[in-house]
Length: 121
Image (cartoon, rainbow, N blue to C red; front, side, top):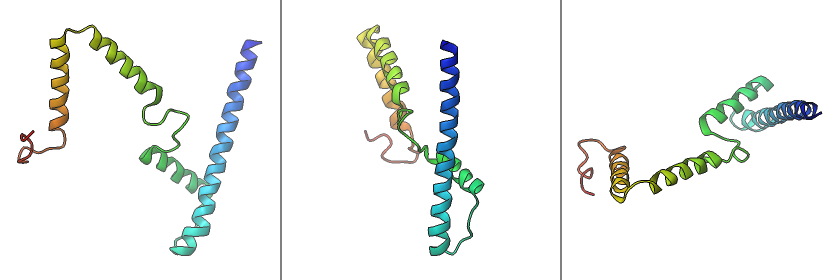
């Protein structure tokens, strides 16, 4: 019985996910065809092209935040807890060494060797 319950739940989730994806694709297609095609005089798109735009936007911009925790969610919390536990078992000298190492890594990131402000901190 427990297995039947989970199979039904998984199948229901898959159907719901497909329906939501189809609905979002239809919304993207409708908005594109009714607004952009008229205002910018560009060609209309098909349902499959709208689905492609939706997937591309997900890849490029990381949209659809919410259920997966957005900006790290529970993965970020697990990572923080892991590091807090690790730091608690270190001596004060080891903790300071790690902190300084990360400060140096972050300070150097994005700065070129010719940048006069690179060593000014």
